[in-house]
Image 1 (cartoon, rainbow, N blue to C red):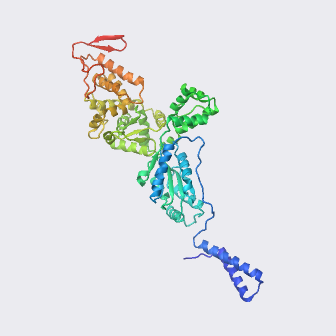
Image 2: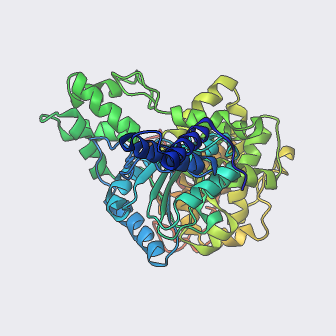
Image 3: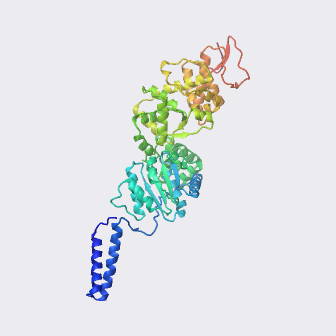
Length: 550
């Protein structure tokens, strides 16, 4: 091992030499010789220790870097219990206990990490460390490693300047110790791999918008918007409004979509203004968008905007167009007619990959169907709270709305007619709109009730379009299905518009027989369809009763 001659080492060696000579020839008095020898020995030992590359710890107390926990935190007991159970499972297996907390922007991941760290701090005698990666790249990983080494009392030297050398130094220092690391806002799997401890007694808590846990074969807890009871507790705790009525609270919860930042802003605004009644009344006059809270200037979609700016142009455009889908959930193929409606057609594989990338960025949420066949044919997605409003605002700036919306309605109508076995006229540009999965009609027919519930709003728009295009069979068939199974949420206006369109289509078509549905749907008023006759009595809206039409 090469030892570098430093001023401290040189001073200690000189002191030792003088003390040794004094002992031999007895030049100095004994009260000066021995202290000089002790100083020279200690100085030389310290200099040799530092010159060899080893550093003694600068602190004795274990670090306790616990993230801040806000006072208004409520609920999440079930998620916290799942995180503790996942941590204990890996800890019992003598493996680094790693827990991933995943969810859309500003859903409360950092708060849950802080609460989990406080619950687990007693199990880690050698300290708790945390670092915020801020969704940056690989460069910030080196900063995190340097921070951990410094807090442990081993500030990195000039020779440890790469991520690999810093990682090796950190793993050397935590050997045989129990330390909990809390890493906030990770973006890539590579970041977590560099920070993942290899010591069985250590733990790691990671928060991320992207889905990272499956790649590392670790447990993941996904955070959704809180339930209505927890949301009400958050608002009332911040508003401090003892006179708040249930109606005002219901309006606030509905307009905020139970999105945690919106709940906090609404409670603080009610406390600063005139209570929840004022916030609800201001919401009701329509002067405020859902992305803002009355009495506050904060933009609640700031987290979505950060991820939106990281997308490429095709992904941004797809994210904006998906806000036109009336249904709460949707499948990747809807992106094909939406893009074709604005003159930018895409392939089915591209649409599937684009929605997968949007879900990885936290701008969409992948959901599982209760039916295995539907889940296999059609992976479904939905928007996180307020993300649809953010995408709609971005789309308005482009001005590409009507063409995409009409193309989507027409594509849904054509797909529904294929399922029902009804022939309708197809426009030439609709060739590339249909789903390309093999046997997709069979998957829908096997779970038609789920299909109607999931696509209720889309089918209602398609029924209205069928009435406008003069397709009575399609309009009546969709109206029958929509009347038999009512999905949630659905507005009375949309359902009645579809039923009136079916009635107008049958009244104005000169038909002598009602269309027979392809599925075994029972007619609501009698066991068999009415017999054919030259003239049929039907109800026409606006004429005050029954009228002969034939």
